[in-house]
Length: 360
Image 1 (tube, rainbow, N blue to C red):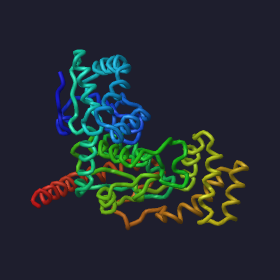
Image 2 (image 1 turned 60 degrees about the vertical axis):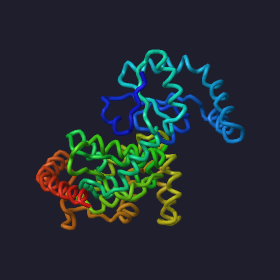
Image 3 (image 1 turned 90 degrees about the vertical axis):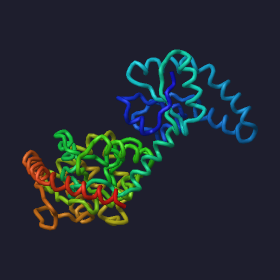
Image 4 (image 1 turned 135 degrees about the vertical axis):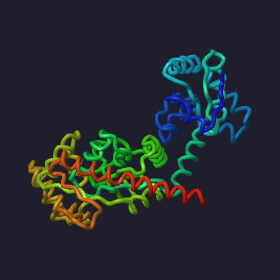
C-alpha cells in the first residue's frame, strides 16, 4: 500500500527509512539528512531523459526513461525490501514527481508497504529555508577564545553530558582557519550544511538555549544562516582560555594525526604571505622542514592567530563568564553550574520571545 504524506507528517513517523531516488549527483548536492540513495537514473541518464523531454516530447522522454529503468527494477525492489525490515520506508525525489511515483507503484505491486513524500526534497528544503528566515527561537551561548584553547573538545564533552552543544565546524567539515580543511574530507554544499544544522537543532528538543563555538559568518565554503549568525552575535559570550603550552600540545596532537600533515601545512603557509610577509613565512617553513613543530606552532599562535582573534588569555570582565581550561574537568563543572543557574532565566526569556512572535 502507498501512503502519501506531507513534510509535517514525516516528522511523526518513528525512525523512518528515507529513500532518495534522485541521481547520485543530486543526492551529493543535498538531500534530507540520513537518507539512502537508490537512483532510478544515474547522472548521465538523467541528462539524457531531460534533454529528450525538452528537445523532443514528454512522451518520448517517458519511453526512454522506461527503457532505462526496466532492467534496474528487480535490484531496486530487492534493496527496498531489505530496507523495509529496518523501519517505515519513505520514497522521495525532487518534487514528488514521476520518479518516486513510478518506483512506489512497482514496490506496491510487490506487496511492500511504503510512504511517498509529497513535494519531495523541495518540500523539505522549503521547510529549512522558512525556519532560518524567521528570528532564531532560542538563546545562543557562544564560547570565544584563541586558537587551540580546546573549544571544540569542550563542546564534545558538553554534548556527552547532555547539554545542547553543536559543533558547527564538524557540520561544515572545516576548522574555520587557514589549515581548517586538513584531513576532514570534502565540504558540504550550502544546502546540505543548512539541512544538517536544521536537523541538529531539531534533535536538541526544547532546550531554551544552545552552545556553539564562535565562528565567522563563513566557515570554509559554507555560510551560517543570517538569523543564526545574528543570534550568535547577540547571545551570551563566554571567554574560554588556556595556557600557551597546552594549546601547542593540543594543536600538535590534532594536526599531526592527519595523513600528509606536514606537506599540507607547508602548502597552506602560502596563504599567510600577505599577512605575515615572505620573510616570516620562510622562517616558519624552515622550522616546519626541520621538524621544530613546537616552535613552529608557538610562533604561528603568537605572531598570527592571537593577533588575528585577539581574545584575552586570562580572566576578563568583558564577557558574561570566563573559563580557564587548564583543568578541563574543573572548567566543565564551572560552566555546568553557570548554565544551570541560567536555565530558568533563559527559559523565561525564550517563552516571552515566543509570545511576542505569536502576537505579531
